Each structure stands twice: as C-alpha cells, then as structure tokens.
Image 1: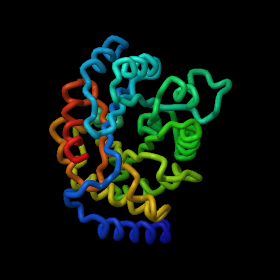
Image 2: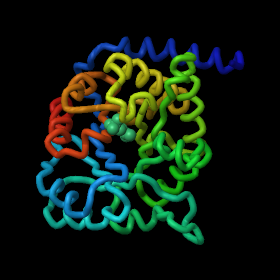
Image 3: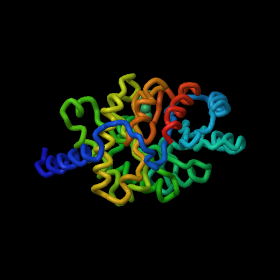
Image 4: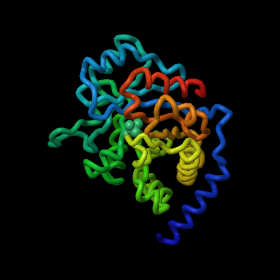
Length: 277
Ligand code: PGA
C-alpha cells in the first residue's frame, strides 16, 4: 500500500480510537436515528399494502421503506392517505437529469412522486451494475440536486477484510463518493459485503469500531459536521441483534434487507432504536 495512504489511515484509526473506545453509548447523540427497509426485488403491490397497513410509526426513529421502483408511488399514496409518518425511499436513481437511458429512473421523478431518500451504491449495484465510486458520486450529486437524501453504501468484501484492507477500502469509497459534496447532507450505511444476506452480521463492537473510523474520516473532511452525520449499519440485522447495534454510540440506525420483509421483525428492529432515539 502506498506509504502516504498508510500513514493517513493510521492517523485516522488513532483518532477513531480516541473518539470512541467502542463502548455502548449512554447519551443521546442528537443525530437522526434511521431504520430503513431495503426490499430489493421483493414483494407484490398487495403484499406492500398489507405491510404498510400493519406498520406503525417510528416513535422518534425515521422509518424509510424502499420498495421496488413500480411500488414507490402507490406506497407514497398509501402512507399519505393514512397520514402515517413513514418515509418512502428509492433503491437507485440515475445520475443524469433525463434522456435516452432506457430502464432508468430520474431523481426528479422520484422526488415528484414523493420519495425523500435514495439508496446509492449498494454493493449489489456495485457488483451487478458495475457502479464504481465515480458513478456513486454522480448519483449522490444528482439526488441532492433534486432534493433526495442519498444513503450512500460502503463496505469491504470478505477478501478485503481478510487482507486487512477494510479501512483503505472504506476511505477510498468515501473520498470518491463525497467529491464535491457536503458530507453533512448525506447518510452513510456501512454494509460489509460479507455480512449482507449471509446471516453472519458484524458484531456490534466490530461495527462500532468501523463507524468510529468512518466518523474520523468525516471529521478530516469537515470537522464541524462530522458529529451530525448519521452512519447506519447494514448486513444481517434482525430482531435479535438490533438492540446491540442500537446501544453503540456511532451506530445511528440500520439498513435492513431480509428482516425487513416481515412486518413483525421490522417493527421490533424499529423498537430497538426507538428506545435510544
Ligand atoms: P440483509 O441485507 O439485511 O439481508 O443482510 C442488507 C442490505 O443489503 O441492505
């Protein structure tokens, strides 16, 4: 690894350790706590309506449901009609304003139909749609331009973790994603690729250590606002482990895949974060 990058990361790791020794947080951080459902390519229209009918509000937690694209508008109409404080988010958007991009969705349209958030750079999009950090950056910029809050996903693969590359990978992804962007306007989701859909989550202590590192990188970019940025954990979060993540100082919520498909499990995860909110 390049020596200057090594030194930079070493310094950030030290700062992260000083910032937070990985102990559970006792004081409210003032940061927005999120519990986000990423349904990926799952659920029918009727299944979504049944889910939203049963889903209760977040009690201080910002709840965002991200269904497949064709369900975004009916989802918004439903929660609006029921006067439920549930946000609707997209799983992806395109980086251009509009034009000849078959199959893509413009951020302006997502905003128009009532989306508030947009997941950007999920590892499945990095893997299956070849999205790189530059694309993530352009998409995040476009989302912000159109008034959507980008939820930027970062995370290392198992191989990168085994080669002790985690901090380097995260730093590269963050710097790439944030080029020309005010970090205080985005939400980060740390999603180790080895933990997604595998049933093998990071431990809460492990995630806390990485979140403190991410916050140290943010502090280097913008000292004033680093403490305000919500950093979520994602990867095999479920109703049993959510409380442990919620107890950590630098874990400001979760991005949930599999366990967000069942309303009971998802509601319990929300409850775990509502206590700390
Ligand atoms: P998982 O997915 O909860 O099923 O591991 C998380 C995600 O991909 O965001």
